[in-house]
Image (cartoon, rainbow, N blue to C red; front, side, top):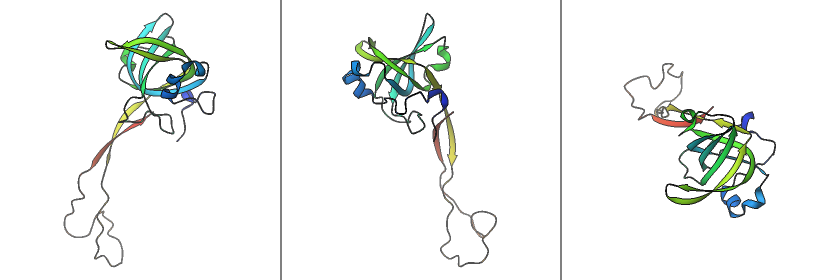
Length: 170
């Protein structure tokens, strides 16, 4: 699985461990990082847009892993205007240098956010696909030509319930 060019970045191994960064943020200022997760809030400011992201682990293609608990929140500043309607509640991955920390709040609780300048970002889409269960195998089948019409030759088969999977895609 390859990482899309928009979020590849320039470092072969951008920082992705938010807990490590937040334990000593001053050590990581200027280092390239790649984080992703759900956009919780969007603030349009003069000449830039600040995304508040609840981060989750990324897979090998830099896509947020579904169903994972948040590892913490970050602010990612993107140059230019991004419409909040297009980003709030969406999954994104951002890449760029860590620029420090910012004191803020989640609800009424004080919180220290890692801040980064996003030089690249990717908004992901969720797609649902149906996965059919495997077809039954007849233990009495002894050879000869396979039945060309799916399932078995005689009688009705219930292959069981289909599964709906949600996947993250471009």
